Image 1: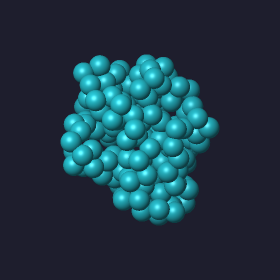
Image 2: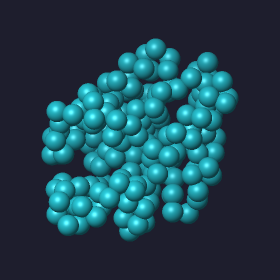
Image 3: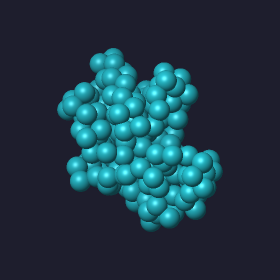
Image 4: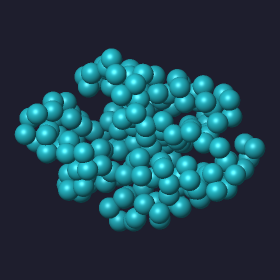
Length: 173
């Protein structure tokens, strides 16, 4: 199974991914987390933040996730994935074991969190093509699950996600 978490920077994707990975391990499942920042520092460091390169970033991530899936590894992907066409591409590559989770958090809350200082830099025009500020983000209309991180904490969000996927996990072992 591939669990694809997407949302704005600062919405809570990585936090939930890490907590889900811990919960899966506690339940006896092996999982791997693919994080957008980590891939951008390595295999995707040749890509810019143009729409075309963002799509290529997602394509590569989805192909890696599919390789993991083909080896029966639960894969948790955390990528901004701002456009519906990019999410559709990921779903098409991965196939019927793709589970899409929209980490929905209002832009103003993400800007308040701004752990990396990226919104500050984007608002000062030091970063261009920044999702939610100078590049568009399309909210999901097709997600299997929507998690609103401004109304529930990370543990509640993770527990809800685990409950949503647990049946599929048990049927795949």
